[in-house]
Image (cartoon, rainbow, N blue to C red; front, side):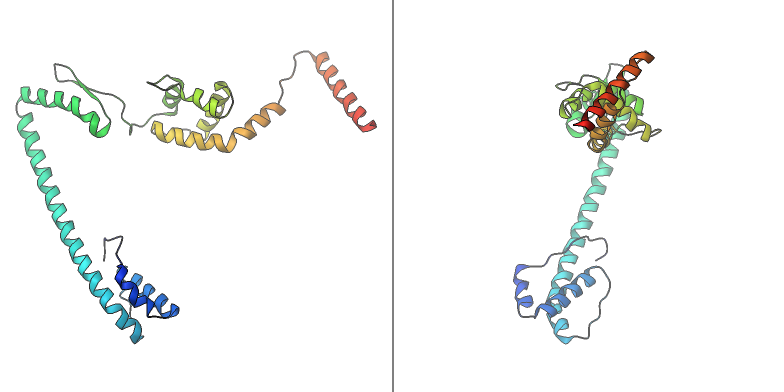
Amino acid sequence: MQGKKSFVLYTDQREVFDELSDEDAGKLIKHIFSYVNDEDPITEDKLIKVAFLPIKTQLKRDLRIWDEKKSQRAEAGKKGGLAKASNATNILAKPSDATNYLANLAVNVNDNVNVNDNVNVNGNVNKQISASALFSLDDVLIDFKKEKPLKRPYFNRMAEVHSADSETIENLFHKWATLKEGESMTISKAENSFNLFLQNNFKSYIQKAKEEKPKSNNIFADMYQELLREKEKNNQSNQ
């Protein structure tokens, strides 16, 4: 059954399994899987042979039907492709027809592949960004920071999700971007990857930021703060 990734067992075949012991039923199902994976199984167990015969017949019948449908689809696809190619050749043979064809494409293509083609009267095509377009990390950063129709900037949305400010989210983005240096990816993939990075690293980043308090430029102020900390420790130990 090469090329076929599934097969069907029918409910009325349950009767065969019900008549077998659990051990023999297990042998039969393993024999079936071996058969449909083209392993040409051989068994000396006459009971398994007899039980498998009607199932084998049905599997062959289903495979024959599947092969016929596969051939029919391939032939239909071939004819459809040739027809489209012929139509496109005829259209593009005349400049005026080609311009009209592209103009119609600009109107209709958005419903099919979510890509807008804007065509001017000279026949020039300006494509907007498609969902499959690849971006550098710098461009991903720009996209994450900008407003979109009916959507706030991505960093703002993530800040709300994690109860943080957008600056913190952007700082984490730069850490993520360091790990992905040199890669190009779609906006959707970038969002998924960065979301996972946030889930795994946000809490530890916040904790580390709290521990790494900025030092004062005044050495005496630092010494004073250090003395206060020592005094607090001593008070706690004396209690």
